Length: 436
Image (cartoon, rainbow, N blue to C red; front, side, top):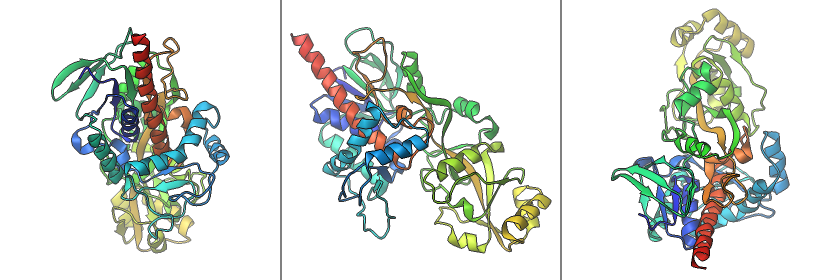
C-alpha cells in the first residue's frame, strides 16, 4: 500500500483517465472508489458522447468545431471562456478522442444510421458502460490496483513529503502517503443538505441521475484544506426526468425531451413555459431548473394524440386518460384550471390525453474546487503541493453555473489525463530532488 506514488480517488471518466495516464508515465498508481463494484465507473456509465474541438474532420466527428466557437457558446451559458484552463480544454479535447481510441474505446461512425448528426460531439459505441469496461481492462493489463467500496475519511493539511490519506474499506482503515493525489470523486449532488438549501421548494423530490456516492465528502475535505472554490454552491445542472424513474442512478434513459409538444403544468395546475427554443442545446438545463423550482420538484406533461406520436422514445409509456375529470382525479390538480389551460393550449380539450409525471433530475452541482492549467488544486499557501483534481469536482472552474451538451465527459477526460500526467511528473521531480 505505501509503495503507491500516485493515488487516484474516483472511478469515473476523470479517475480512469488519470490513473491510466499516470501509469503510462511510469508512476506506481492505485485507484480507489467509494462505490461498490456494480457502480464502478461512476456517472461515466451513463454517458454517450463528449464535446470535441477540431479544426478538420476526424474519423468520428465530421466537419469542424473551432475553439472560438466553443468559447462563444461557453460564454453564452456563463462559463469561463478564456484563460489557461479553457485553452487546455480546447487544445486537448481532440487528442482525447484519439487517445481513448488507442486504449480500445470505440465510437459510432458519423454516417451511422442510429446517431444524429453532430460536428461538436463524438458518440461512444455501446455508450459509457462499454467505455468503462474497456478502460477497466486497460488498468488491469497495466497492473493498476483498484479498490471499490473504499472511502477517503481523512486528508489532513499537507505537512511534509507525501499526501497523508486515511482510507476506509472492506479491509478496515489504513493510512497511505502517496507522493501525489488526484481527486476525481465527483461533487455534492446527492448531498441532501445541499439539495435542501439550494432547492428548498422541491422538498426532497429531486432525483439523482448518477451514483449516490456523490455526497460532497471529498469536496468538503478539499475546501477544509484551503482549496479555492469554483462555481456557485446554490445551484446545479438539472434536467427533466420521468418521475417514475429510480431515485438514484437513473442515468440518461429516464430523461425527457420535447416538452414543447404539449402543456406542462405544476403541482397547482399552473402552466410552465420557460423561454427556450425546442432545439436549443440548453433546453434540458432550462427545463430542469424550471421543474426544480416547483413544489416537491414535480410537474406534469400533457399531450394530445399528435404530441404523443411525435415524442422521442421514452423508457416509460405515457399514462392515458379519457377526460379532464379523469385527469384531475389522477393528478390531484384543479379540474377547472386544467380545462382552461388545455383549451388555451390545444384550442379545445383533446380526447384522449396522454401524460408524463415530471421530476427534476440533478446531474451535478455547480460547485467545486479551482484548478490551474496543470489540474493542480489551487492552494496559494502550498504552491508546490501534489494535490490535483479532475472531473465534476473541478468542472465549475470552466462551466460556472452553466452547461453545454457533452462538456462534462470532455472536461473529465481532458483534465483526468492532465491530472494523471501532472501527478506522475510531480512525484518524479520529487524523487530527483531527494536523490540530489
